[in-house]
Image 1 (cartoon, rainbow, N blue to C red):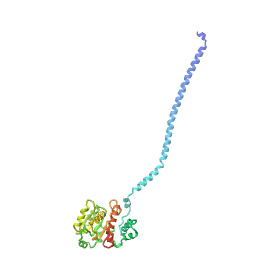
Image 2 (image 1 turned 180 degrees about the vertical axis):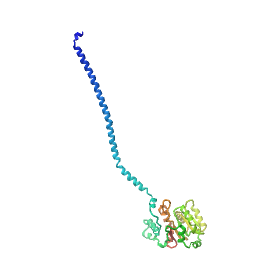
Image 3 (image 1 turned 30 degrees about the vertical axis):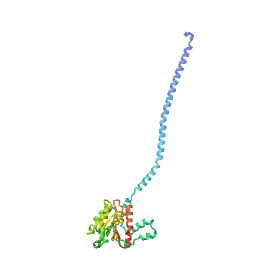
Image 4 (image 1 turned 90 degrees about the horizontal axis):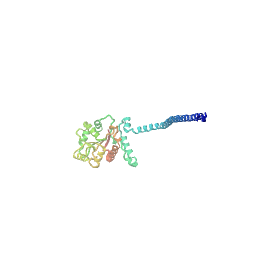
Length: 286
């Protein structure tokens, strides 16, 4: 049978077998090349993503850079806003008060509330003021200077619900301090505390009506309230001393505190200015 087929079947088998092996080899080579190409593509992708990410980062970084000077300006503005009146007063040198300061206080407050004629009526002459503290006096030494005949004045005072000397300050604590400083000046005179903290106004009214008091020390709000209730009469008043130069822990004067400033203006308006013009009351700045 092998003879019938002859030698050609061997050749045919070898050709067919070789072709199958070559096809398999070509297939394997194709798959391997495909895998290599896929792997190269996969390797290239993260590099492209990383480059893109870097670009994005650089872009975002470029965007953020111009915002930094804006932030610095905002922060500087905020720092400027935080500057308080204490900082301003700390950098300024203390100056003693003068009659012009009181006049400016009244003029600025009533400028848009009164007519020109009414503003003229608010003006006080220099004769309405006592000598001012030049920041060298204690309270007792200052009062001895402006009231040299105090012992005689206090003996002549016999009217209840009134005082001869009225000292106006900004707080209850300051009131107590000033009363302690009166020791070497007042002699036998009686001083009364006129502030609202821990003291009811009814108690102060009874105290003023009960006996003779020579000196009143207190805040403008409580003093005005006592005048409104007819508990404090200004007819016997001769000296009104304003605690003008003293500064609190925040370095504020009495007129630097808005509510105290308004209460003081109200007190001056409720009859004190009229008494000053009638030459019955003199104003001193301590």
